Image 1 (tube, rainbow, N blue to C red):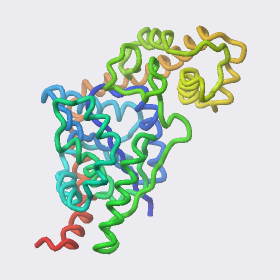
Image 2 (cartoon, one colour; image 1 turned 90 degrees about the vertical axis):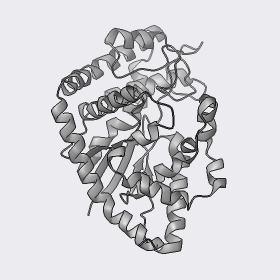
Image 3 (cartoon, rainbow, N blue to C red; image 1 turned 30 degrees about the horizontal axis):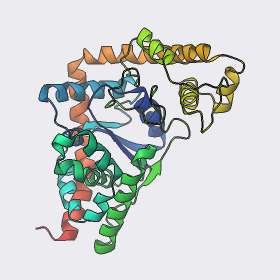
Image 4 (cartoon, rainbow, N blue to C red; image 1 turned 180 degrees about the horizontal axis):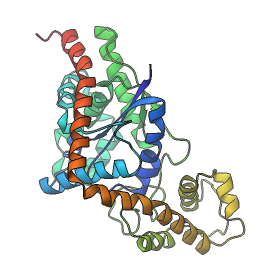
Length: 327
């Protein structure tokens, strides 16, 4: 039997080049070997205050992007988290098996609290528990993650293992799936920090909807260093990040990417990377525009995905309820 992969992405804006190369671009390739569920995690999104109309639009936009980027609804389960109540129900149950001390150690809570000091809510604090429920609800064997999510996956493994120790073999203990190249794409202006759509620094982030000239302009302004060598090195975060992006977009290794620019200057290097990114994103942008004009199709995908996800979640939730003694 095929193993199961689960992953989710928040509908809090247009996907970035970082999320595309760090996660989404690898997802559809897995469907030949695994049962794959990809979720628009709108329940997670509301830990930050959202405008209702914007949240709805972002959700549909994201669903269209996932399909445009290669996730075939016939081979993958695509759905909205809020359409499957089992997520929230199991999330509450697992809150009761997660220790406060464990949540206090979550570094992302500290980081997000600093950015949202006016709205440090309980959902932001227990966010990793809902993530745990998302994963174990489907007995997921693998979870595609970036380096910044490893702590949350470890919590998931701890909570699932604790539950199993009390009640028997209920949950599958998941493992991480990290792509070998592009697991963490950094910002263009802040190459020591992950590229994030929540970062408002001008030019730091490439959005998948950016026009070609905008993309090239952002890359031309990308931070490099005072050296002249185009190579991957710990003391060259800007250059290393651009080489990683180039390698991901071309399918080349980092060594091959370095060789492509041997003897070239930074100006030529940044211009070329920008052009490669713009050219590769163009067909995805065109397909996204076509899908956004077909509301009937998007509604159908969402409804069918939710139905499949609910059916897959039901046995696990029933087993959990029986184990803990619910009537």
